[in-house]
Each structure stands twice: as structure tokens, then as C-alpha cells.
Length: 377
Ligand SMILES: Cc1cc2nc3c(=O)[nH]c(=O)nc-3n(C[C@H](O)[C@H](O)[C@H](O)COP(=O)(O)OP(=O)(O)OC[C@H]3O[C@@H](n4cnc5c(N)ncnc54)[C@H](O)[C@@H]3O)c2cc1C
Image (cartoon, rainbow, N blue to C red; front, side, top):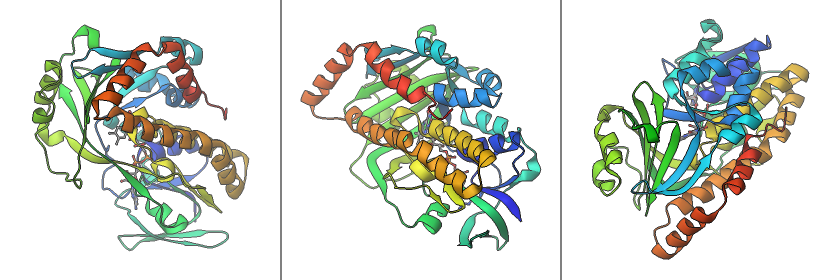
């Protein structure tokens, strides 16, 4: 019988695996794809996530694979600043920075932190039967495994959640996102910073990943059902700063991912007996605060910490109690921020932009301080 089964080899599942392995807690990770590969292009591991990686002793390696981000800038379409936030005082306070990293680099690194034999690929979970002392898992290839605990880290459309916790509501934001990595020499003034350019119903963000790689994301509000087919992004963003248009041109179109931006309406509990949900499966958020993955990383650390101290059922209840308020704060605020960023009526848009220009950095830093604090340590 397997001690702990983790479903899903995304950032949440892999970080959980690393944290369990370091505590000599046995597990098997099941991933539906044949190879563990990233969904999306780049990711920002913010100070809260990097503090977790620091406690796992892997923050320096991860920092070396990516690029430090010292500033968060929101601009208009022409890259004229609406708000700029210097993150360095927070780095000093928390002794951990924000790192922009290619998802493939992060996932490969995490995967190398525990033996390959603990991962089973081509295992798509299709059924779960729970008894008091064990859980039977069935996979699409017909195989089945009995385990003592089940951690569902299988993303926003989690099968674990559907089978154990019932149907929950996914909300579409009406915003669609395209992500890519351009080969591009960023001018010095754009290095070590995340830029997000806002216009009516459109947003374009970019950040350097090092080694001439620039991760970018483009968001468009659309009044039609999501279609993953390629779109002419250049035509949507032609009025943006020429460098943004150049970034699009410098990207291999075959490597661009498209996604409908959705979240999971906050659910009451992520723990049921010896089953727990983690990451997007538990609290999928829209990406507007760049925190979905960071929250999954925090979950992973807390789950491992609790499993070390307590019997599984108590550990999962405790994990749920510790993490739910902060993760749902992110879900709710990301949703609000995303709507505000895409306001299309000129009057509220101008008021928003003015407010952003005059809001003191200290106010925004206070908000980030709350986000970056690991109150469970
Ligand atoms: C455009 C965009 C930008 C983002 N930017 C950031 C950012 O900068 N910083 C940040 O922190 N977050 C960001 N996020 C959010 C972040 O990507 C997610 O929160 C994070 O990937 C969630 O990780 P996860 O491991 O919970 O789920 P996932 O990454 O979705 O991984 C789930 C895994 O489970 C597997 N799986 C699914 N179903 C099954 C099954 N039935 N059986 C077996 N395996 C299964 C999948 O194949 C996958 O490998 C962004 C999201 C988007 C959409």
C-alpha cells in the first residue's frame, strides 16, 4: 500500500514531493501526461514562495536558474509609468526576493530533488473509492493502487476534487491569455522588473528570464466563447509600445500557449478524512496577483509540516485551517484586480489611473507584506 499518493506533477505536486522527501515521508506522485512538462511559459516565484524554497534549502539554486525582479511596474500602453514599486525593502525584510523563472527550468529542478522511481507517468486518475483506513485509486490505463492518504494537486479542473468533494463552480473572467517566451535583448532599463501595460480591455506583461529570454503574457477581454486557435496578437497590440510589438515578433508562434482565465469560486473545505486538495485544485485563482503557484508552494510546505507532526486526518484539517484564509484572499483580490485592469469605460479608467499614480508605494508595500508573510511558520 502506498503511504501518500500525490495526484499531479505541477508546481504544487512537485513542491509537495520535495517537502515530503526531505522529511523522509514516503509518497508516490501520479501524473497523467507521459512526461512532466510545464503548462505555460514563465512564472514569478514571489518572496513568499522563495521563503518556502529557502526553508527547503533550494532557494539559491532556483534563483540561479532565473532572474531577480526588483520592481513591479504598471504602465499605460506606451510603457509610461502608472505605478512603480521597488521590492528591495521587502527583500531585505524577508531575506528572499522575487524570481522570474522559466517553468520548465523550475519543474525540472524540482523533479531532480527526489528519486525518479517515486513518479509514475501516464497515470490519469479516473476514480477514487474511500474507506476509513485506505483509498483505492483507479487510473485511465486500468491500473489501480491502494493508498493511505490522497493529495489532489491536479489543477483547476481537479478530478480528485470532483470525485471526493463534488461539483464546484469554475468562473470564467471573460479574459483570454496568450503566453510566450521571446528571444530578445531587453534594453537595460527593462531588466530586473516586471512590466504590465494596461489599455482598454487589453493587458501585456513582460519580464526578463535571463539568457536573452523574455517571458510575456497578453490578455484580451472577449465577448465570445474561448477558442484556443492562434490569433493575430500583433493586430490587438499594434497601438502598444513598439518594443511590445517586437517581443511578439521575436516569439516562435508554435510555442505560444493560450488559456481561458478562470478561477474556482472559493470552496468551504479542502480536507475530507484522509484526502486533501492543494494548489489550483483547492483554490485556483486568476493570475492577476501572480500568486497561484506561490500559494500552491505555501500549501506544499504546510501539508508536509503537518504530516510530519500529526496523523493524516488531523494533519489535513490543520493544513486546511492554516491556509484557507490567505489563499482565498488571493482568489478574491485577483478577481477584483483583473476586472479593474480591463475597465473599458474612459471615466473610471482615468480615475483608476490617477489613483494609481498618487497611491504611495508604502501603501502597496504594506499589502505585499501581508502576502509575503508566512504566518504558519
Ligand atoms: C497566465 C497565467 C500566469 C500565471 N502566472 C503566475 C505567476 O507569475 N506566479 C504564480 O505564482 N502563479 C502564476 N499563475 C498561476 C499558476 O500557474 C498556478 O497557480 C499553478 O500552476 C498551480 O499549480 P498546481 O500544481 O496546483 O496545478 P497545475 O500546474 O495545473 O498542475 C496540475 C498537474 O496535474 C496533472 N493532472 C491533472 N489532472 C490529472 C489527473 N486526473 N490524473 C493525474 N494527473 C493529473 C496535470 O497534468 C498537471 O501536471 C499563472 C497562471 C496563469 C494562467
